Length: 628
Image (cartoon, rainbow, N blue to C red; front, side, top):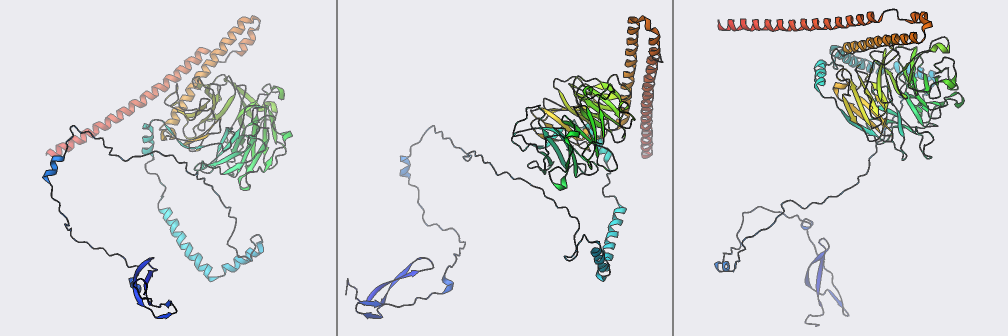
């Protein structure tokens, strides 16, 4: 015995490996005792179902275990505090934290599917193999049954489409009337920033011709010899729904000043470079230019405008620059221009006397005519099909004090065109060369670009150096813009409207391109707007003609006084009609128009009053019948 326990007895401890604890202890008799060494063997068993048993809870009524009654003697020890003010905050304690989330960039990728579905042993390029395989498939019975089934399904769909027009608009007029009551407004849809660290000016914008889901932006620094050394030459094509990353990067040899989509082939773009070269891209081949013009036969100054021509091939364009030239190109042969015109208004063809071109205008409905806006503030009207270079310059229009940054014909009335320069925007008529027929007030900031609305003949937009976009609606207001919107803090340099007139893109000096959506009233054709705009333009043209005749007569009188010996020449230069006759004729036509309009309104009022009387008589007859 040691410590009261016999040597052949030992205390055993059982370790529960499932619950990682000691499960108890027990005394077992020695099974083999040899020389003070005891070997004990015992097997513990336990059912598998007893391991890891879950706890089962059950509901039962409440039970009272302890009930401590109040002790009245303890109330004497209670000390009252009077008054007692305690502040309690009912809301949870909160703290403000800022977290920069990871920027998510989207990327669009596409595949050009040419031809597929051929077996591996058939080469689609070999005509004989494909023809043989087609004949083999067409003889198969399964092919014939499949085509027959698909034909019946297709015929059913065609009949459905013929039965009803699912795209028919039933209430177009009501929508137009709703838009008229709305105040002019615009909202920002997206903002596209120049991805480079050194910001450049968004010099030109061009919408994708198919649907306008993409926007091509040309970036360049227009400050002469002030471009930073590490400035990027890249320009970009943006998807208007993804402002984070451009869809395609165009890599020219020199910064792009102008960029235009081909209206006939949306994969082709032509650009005018800062060094005077013309280049074009095929977006299917990537961002590298397909071909460049030879620098010896290109412009000598930056190419400020490139326009595609309306041709059968869809490969012809023409460009202008401040070097005083207009060059015609065919992108199939860029080694030299197909035609050349020097903008010398003296018609001598001297390049030293030529006026520098900044803006171009070409209307496809008038394929032989085009107009050039110069940096001297003059518009040159030209005819491409003239026989001699001197005859190609038809006439000039002067009225601006600085470069004409934009020139565009009215899409509804091609005789009238808009020019933007210095501090004003002016509307001209081809019939009046002395002066513009209408113009805006002189702004405090310089105007940089402008364009007509493609859907409304009386609406045009202008951009200014103070970052403001002005929308003018001459039908309702002529002294001030209908909408003036502060787009950004820096100067706006370029402007482009989509074909539907609803979306407008503005490019700024620091490469910020803002996409705006105009309110329905500004992009919906109003009732009788064309007729009213026509009358307005014709009235102003007549007024300018009368003033021109008056000024011509005054100049002739002054000349005759100064040179009495040249009376005969003065008589020859006198207008065919007398000034008083012209004024009386214009007054007569003016009063006839007013009288006709007054009679028309009187007829309308009489007609409406007659209808109201008929309605009253019908209602009175109904009342008499009901009483009877």
